[in-house]
Length: 133
View 1 (spheres, rainbow, N blue to C red):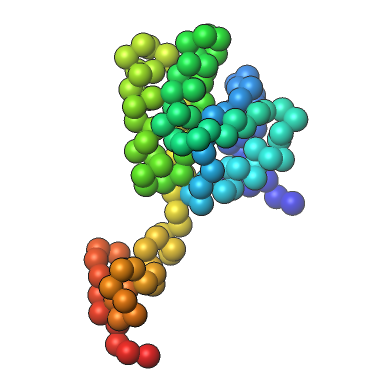
View 2 (spheres, rainbow, N blue to C red):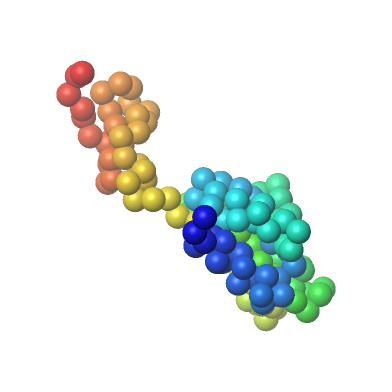
């Protein structure tokens, strides 16, 4: 099997001496989660209760070990929730890396029924009325 991008990312983290990653799984990072699972004998994934805790734990890891802290989150609100912990790391001059996923563009908001009943779908910028099927 050819090497996936996610396997390369995890391999690079291992080569840099990263021993653990703190995060919360989500659709935008499924590939990296699988790569972490394949490399579970070399790097630990610590699942947190939410993304904000992942960033704070990565910051605490950096503060108390002197190593680089790493946190991971999915796209959208998950990525935003990392900000408090990342800002804490910035203010304390601690090395923290945040890995944030992104949904493929062909599935991001396309043809999903949302909120307005059977005649409304979310596509790109806002709701559109679909013709009756």
